[in-house]
Length: 276
Image 1 (cartoon, helix red, strand yellow):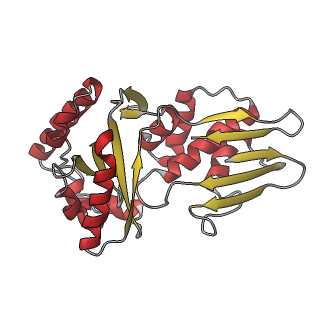
Image 2: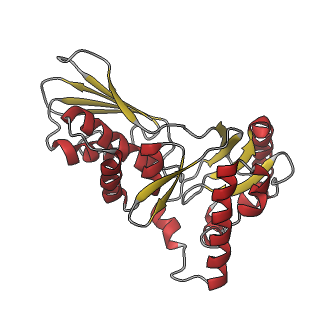
Image 3: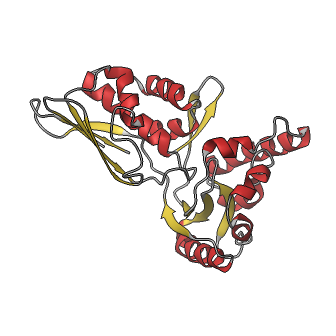
């Protein structure tokens, strides 16, 4: 997003994902986040170029909230530290998971209290994101979860989560196939994710190291090594076509750094550009 100062009321322009759908007003999530630090947004033109699909479990709302907070921090000279940004993003989102990755970059784990801990990213790790055409609201995905889970499911998932962190820190990607199994949320959300059972059958066939639901879904992440990413994407697209699911596969790396702001013009007509 780019913010330009000029006399007059707030203007908001949205291009890309969600154009014509998300509000072009102070109700836009970006603007609501900016208002937490600036109060009035008069005199600003906000231009958003959205690249993250909405309602797909890819953290689009956290990206918008964090972009607004970072922009407010820069424009207002607020001197919020990254932890301050995360605290405010958590107020907006209700949790800090996606916001932690937006602000700090890399792979993060959010611990109780909302503190984000960075985990080393193996150089060889890439993801193939399989983004279905249809959406699933976060509220619907949360509603699919039971109030309680069996103790054995919690213990098994906790053990695998600890193993996953250690494998990532050590770069031991060969252990991922046995670690990327979840018994806390995926069994309940899988019916909302079109084609996931077919995608799971790719694990071990074409260099795919594991298949997990991205966020609350319905996007699916296929974990793979760099050399296998193109083949995994091709097989994923073909597999979903077999079961009649329309989706787009993209090869993505883990962003090494988080969102940031920079001035790109002089002080009289300054532009704050939030880049993530």
